Each structure stands twice: as C-alpha cells, then as structure tokens.
Amino acid sequence: MEPKQPPPMGGDNSELQVFELGKEIRVPSGARIVSQGEAPQAFYVIKSGLVKVFRETADGIRTDLTDLGPGSYFGEVALVTGQPRTASVEAVAETFLIEIAKDDFDQVLDQNPQLARHIIKQLASWLVTGDRRLESEVVHQVKLRQISWFDYLLMVGLSIVFALVFNLYNDNQIPLFYHPGGKDAVGEISLSQALDLYRKNEAVFVDARKDSFFKQRHIKDSLSLPVIFFDLMYPMFEFMAAQKGGAKDKPVIAYGGGPSRRFDLELAGLLNKKGYEKAMVLSGDYQAWQNAFPLEGQEGKKPAALPLGFAGAIEWVPLSIFVLLLIPPIRRSPYLSVFCRVLLGWIFIQFALSKIMRPAVFALNVVDYGMMPAWGVNLWSLALPWAELVAGLFLILGIRTRAAATLIGAMNILFIVGLVNAIHHDLPINCGCVGEAGEPVNWWKVTKNAGMLLMAIQVFLYDRIFVLDRGGFIWRERKI
Image (cartoon, rainbow, N blue to C red; front, side):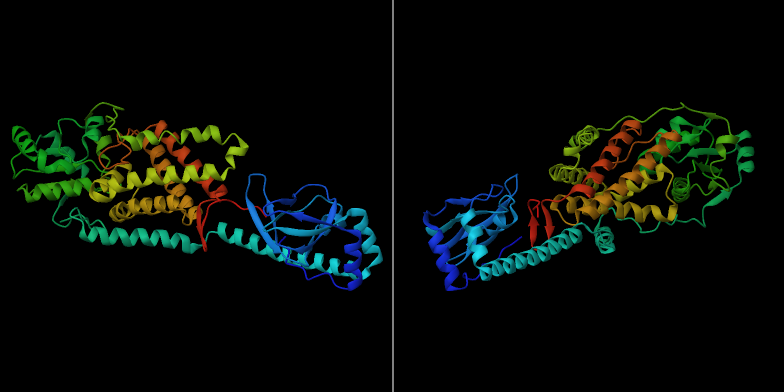
C-alpha cells in the first residue's frame, strides 16, 4: 500500500497527551527508524524533519511509498493490527520524533476517541488506495502479458512489406507467384508413350532434380541435369545426349516430379530455348515413373553435410533447455527467458539473413520438402525469412515478446513437421537453413528444433523483465 501524508493530529488534548506520554528523540539523516518485518514497539509523531516510507523485497527491489513531514505520524498500523511492520522508515534529513511506547499508545487511544477515529479513517483511506493501486498493477500486468491480433498483424505485415520492397530492388528478384515459364509451349507425353519410347531407345530421359535425388533413385540410363546448375552442366549434358543419339530434333523427356512439378517444367522450357524443340514432361501422375521404368541408384544415400558455422554450433545450446526445464525454479525464471530470447533471436536472425539475399535458392529448398503447392512457394520463400528476422529482432529488443515467441514457436513446429516428413519419405536433402548450406535431415535436427520450441514456450510463459512497455523498458519484475 502507498500511504499518503496524514494531516496533523487533531485536537489540543490529543497533542498534549502525546507529548506528555512520549519522549523526544533525534534521528540523523539516513538513519533507519523502523524496519519492515520487525515486531512493533512504538508509535512515532514527527516534530520536525522529513522521513521516507518504503518497502523492499527479499531480492533488494525497493518501492518508495511516500515522504512524511512535521505533524505526520507512522507506526500505528502494526500497533493496531499486532502484525510485523509493513514498511521501513528512514530519515531523509535530521529529524526529531516523539516516540510513544505501545502500552502508552493504547492508553492514548482509549482516552481519546477523536484520535482513534482519525487513525481508523486514515487506515481505511490507505486500504482503499492500496486496493486501487493493486487493481491498477494487476490490470497493467495482464495487459502486458496479453496478446492481440494486432501483434501478429504487425509482425506478419512488416515481414510481407519488407519482403516485397526488398524483392523489388534485389538483383536476385523472383516473381511473387510461381508460373512455369512457357507452360503452354512445353509439350506433355503420357507415361505409356514415354515407356514405349524408352524401350525403343528413341528418346533421352533427363532428371531435373538435384543430384542427391538423382543418385538415390532415377530411371536407368537417364541423364542428370539439375535446373539450379543448368548453365554450368548444360555443355556436359549436350555431349552426353549426343552420345546417346539424342539429336535436337528427337524427344527429350524431363522427369523427376514432386508436388510442384517445378523442376520438370523449368528444365523442359530451358531445353526448348536451347533448340530441343521436342523437350517435354510426363503428363498425369508425374511421379508414376518410379513404378513403371527400370530404376537404379543408391537407396538411402544422404547428401554431405555443409557446415553452418557458429550459428550451427549455437543450435546445440537449446538441447540444454531439456535439462534446465526439469528444475522448477529455473524453469520459471524470467532471467532464463531473457537468455532464451537473445539466443533464439540471434539464431533466427543469422539464418534469415542468408535466405533473404538469395530467395530463389531458398525456394528450391522449399520445393525439396514436397509440402508446399507450386503457386505459394515463391511468396513463402520471400516472406518466411523476413518473418524470422522481424520475430528475432522483436525478441532481442523486448518488443511484444510473447507474440514473437508464438510466431517463432509456430515456425519451429512447421519445420519439425517438414523434417519428420522428409525422414519418413527418406528424402536426400539438407535442412536448407542457410541457403545452399545445411545439415542432413535427421532426428538430431528434429531434437535441436524441439529444444528451440521449448525455449519459445518458456519465453511465452515466464518472460517478465527487460521488455518494452508504455513507459519504457521494464528492467526488473516488481512485486506488489
């Protein structure tokens, strides 16, 4: 509660009794008069000087309540209630007090109903003021912890705006929505017709997927020409196709497939531009070739790991959260929340920056997971890295941290689902965390992201300090 300065004690008779029963004491500046939590021994009236009333928590957080001057009094709450002192009092300047022992104070109250009523009114006033302040603080804390749709609209909106503006001026610009170039001009061939040409050796089959997919499983005697390395590998492809009797006027069938069919159509379009007028793709179920053609490859072969550097090493830190969360005091610590915020923010910012600069590469990584429809791949690849960057910055800066933690937690869940799906289907891919670089998809990667998910949950539940509020940053949690 926050006591206000009480008015001088009313009535000459009460003042006379106080001065008669009490003794005058001198308190130097800075001296402690009473301490919070101690047993009450006396009642004090300020004759001259100034004192400060304050409360202090066990961990040293001090809350100043009020200043009291001449004619004011203190110490009556503990004497009336019989409870330990509810606050501490110290002299701000040299102060002279009238000290009245507990027994004498009871005598004054018995003989002076006017003083008793005055003290009761003052106690009631403090109680009402304290209740209002408590309500205000509770409402403030609730509002601080509340999450509104505006928080998410703000972060998602900023991500989309930044993505669109940056893509507009980026040398590696990609279209917002994927439309296969020259789709109408790219011919299609049914699976049965393609199989007939294969048996007659009258067509060249070329795998449009990445090399890791080709090595794992491909049509026997087909050629590999990944779209992402088309300019680099085309001369070798042209030589190999000529060796197989694949003149430019003969059919060239691009295959590989996937939910977006993106690689097949792009490769066929590029070959058309190079003079292969009969470059085409499989129609219908464009993954059915795996059950119709003779296959060869190395089952289960995973791509080599490309180190993620310091960011990859930091990813192992969240695993320690599994241990820390087993300790209740640490699990609920707001200081652990600050650690989790900074670490999560730093990881997501590092990964976001590499993908922002090269959205086309990230788009191909998204295609590898086989979970995104073709029309949404580019927009997702543009917006997601910026969402990682914005949420990471919000966490580090202490801005709308619970909403930012929710957003990062949601991204972790989506990534975990993608990883589990890739493991289940034995996809030979890297995680794609940092552009072309990444770690192989495995259960360790799932575990690390589960650790980051737990960190986001901890921030959501217990983040209380160093957060931006209406009046500025809250550095420490204040108890009421």
